Length: 83
View (cartoon, one colour):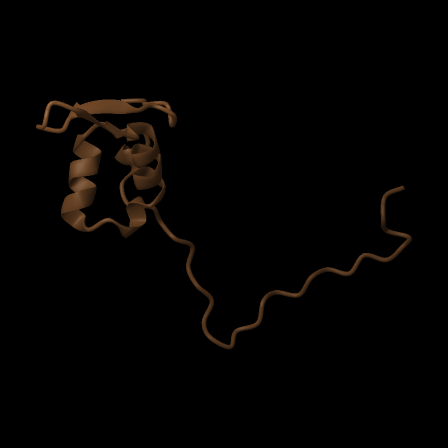
């Protein structure tokens, strides 16, 4: 299911009125934060058919060990720089 980010649904509130639900924004936010969802929440989100949800839990890059320095940045001399 693909829903534009700007999509808004009007849902009956039970008192004869309606409530606006920013469905597109909710799907976009949930999809980008799916790594933080609990297992059951993630399963429900995937079953909803949201585009991008089928990839499952987002993988974070491995962290560096504490105290481990970053790799050195190569130094480029003036002669090596492109004109």
